[in-house]
Image: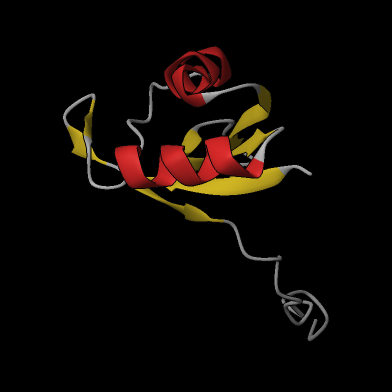
Amino acid sequence: MAKKLYVGGLPYSTTDSELTDTFSQFGAVASAVIITDKFSGRSKGFGFVEFENDADADKAVSEMDGKDFGGRSLTVNEARPMEKRPRSDFNRGR
C-alpha cells in the first residue's frame, strides 16, 4: 500500500526530479510533486512524495524531518487528506 508524505520548507528552486532523487534513497518513490501557484507557476515551497511501501515512507519521515535541505529545514510528515474549503464569493457582489 502506498503512503503519501507532506514535505514542507523546500527551497523555491527545488524540482520534482530533485525531490524524487532525494527521497528515493529510502525506497521506491511512486510519485513526487512540487506544488506551484496556479497563476505565477512559482513553487509554494512544499510538495508531496508517495512511496510504494509504508515502511520506506516511515523511514523517510524519521530521517528527513528537520534535516537541512538547500539551506532550509524540512518538515516531513504523513500527508493528511485535503480539507474542503468554502468557495469564495469574491466577484458575486458586483
